[in-house]
Length: 616
Image (cartoon, rainbow, N blue to C red; front, side, top):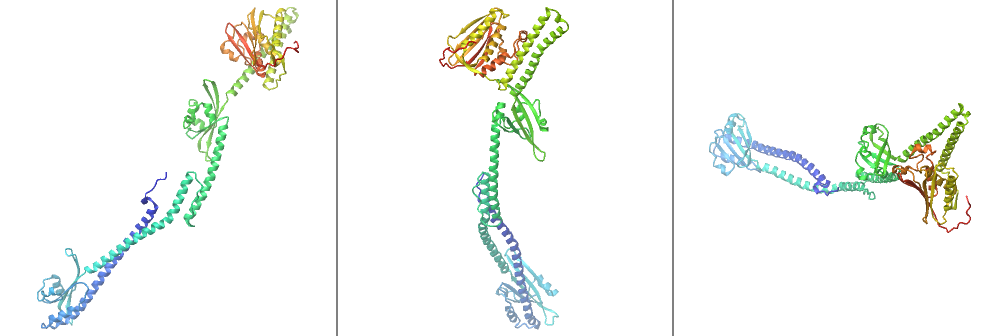
């Protein structure tokens, strides 16, 4: 977020402030040293000047005090004092050995001439013949003074003839130093302000390129790469600006490449027939494609961020540590209102080059149909084996009985041979049906279609069944009730295959009808389709078995079916044939009341008469 900064928070303020601080520190050190040296030197010069003049004065007054003449001594001493020159106020007194002031330089001190002083320092100088020098400060008067008392020796230096007491005002010296310090401070302040202004101007030369680079960094972070940084010079900032421009180009290329790869990955994930789930190293979902959401029946927001174990509902059987150890395959069984779904999850570990595990990828595949197909294959093999083993067992048993001597019995031998013949025919029919189903599954089952009068075909088949009944070829008595449209209905079908379908349904109706029952055959013309239904008065089919009637080898009453020679393939073949003709077949049944098998075929009324029909 780009917040607006106050001036004192900017580099334009901080750089000048840094210069000013450095400058002030420099002025502080320079000022302390310079003012201190100036003050020391000024005081030293002042004192040297006073000392020199005091020495000169001592030399001038020494002969006067040594002569001992008192008539003109005061006048001559006053004249000597007038030779003492100083720009500062200086009080001078001359005292003889009797501690009497014999001369003074200012009018207000003239009143003291002839009086005796009691100053201890003067007494000490007279006694010790040693000069006394001191600098004093009167806080009340705020006055600095330089005091010097020097002995006056005789011409032969053998004795002290007096002293000179000088008190010089030093305020002017200190005032000059203070004035110089004030001037220095003012100059420092002016220099600081000028330096600040100059630093602000100069800092803009630094901050402007930096601000340009900052703005470019913001644009790069926002994905804007078309505004390069202005290069203001060939210095380090200029090189940095050029580097940032090159970086923007490389970031743009990398971004475009990444976006292209992301779109490609999204396209791949979106159109994959398998679901894909990616997690972090803690097993939380980071990515899930649409197919995975469809397979799991969950919304995208609900899937993101949760544990993959929870998402796939495998927390009770697997742990995250198990999945992180090696690539794993997990079968998941999910049941909903539409039935059971079987999902196969293949987990792969995501590793860095260092071997560090960063997450998991799970590929979900719906293997419901494959599992059903595999189960059907196993059931098919089992059923075929069982169905073939039953007649083979009978054939083997009767063959062994014949080989052991039963062939000699003229009554038993023919019965055994009939059973063998019947079981052989049963196996041949089963093998023939299996071959038909194999051709249908392999797409090799071809229809030899032609336009026929379907009503005549149905009547012909029913006549054949009635003929078998009248000639005693049927073991069971039955009666066929016909309800057939009066119109001639021409349909494009394979006559042989359609005859096979109707035979299968009629044979089932006869098998499962009671002796003397009625079989009703109804043919309807519904303009766009024809519908043939065959009803019996048998025991019927339980509702739970109705959806499976047309499955291969499926029989409601297996024991009874085997007794009657059924293979469980007739209805399955009938269903395949009807669907090859573009129709559909189904069954309706009420237990203890009978069953009805119905199929319909597409039909177009071309207005064809019955001429040209060939009897079958």
